[in-house]
Image (cartoon, rainbow, N blue to C red; front, top):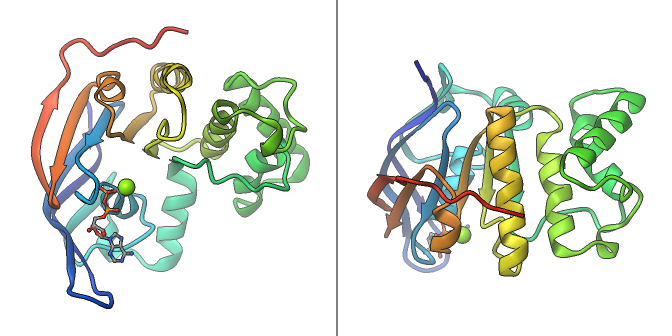
Length: 237
Ligand SMILES: Nc1ncnc2c1ncn2[C@@H]1O[C@H](COP(=O)(O)OP(=O)(O)O)[C@@H](O)[C@H]1O
Ligand SMILES: [Mg+2]
């Protein structure tokens, strides 16, 4: 019934810098089924962010295979990769990555500028997305006039404006207190449920991971476990 959103096989990535090469990923295989919500865990330096960057086509693997839908990502050119990244994948980061001098509405509307959506439509869709994440009435606030949790909601709204199939969230609650983290998880669970969005969340917090349906653990650039969560926690707000 369910198809894979993406599938990786034997992915490797080495960074060559000033010192000795860092083998960040040493043969990672992983598939994500449509509509799945998965947590990726692992100690600092285990390769989580590297994996997310490759999944999001922000960087290229050195070896292995990567299939997104029925497309071979390894064979795609820059234009196709940018299209995949901008239209089919949403990104959320630990530090929100909002433009400080742009309002919540402008931040959310920005990805639609690149997608060529007209100004009126951009604004109405951005306002709708802000409503969806519970920020009605905050459209014209600047990021520094919003709490951390509200800023992350703006970032989540921004990640969804082009209706992606997949949301990649790298430590989305890493900068938030426990209570606010649970609110963000409640929002992600609702989006997962209502929009049939596939979600991958990197976290080092076990409590956050237990809100997902499956937990994949990395260690030293390898998948060391991949397990279903029997009764995922439902975040209550
Ligand atoms: N741009 C880079 N250049 C060189 N080394 C890097 C770079 N990014 C990450 N690394 C190294 O690759 C390894 C994996 O890093 P990362 O994927 O950020 O791990 P995690 O997100 O699990 O903490 C670490 O040893 C890190 O220092
Ligand atoms: Mg990281």
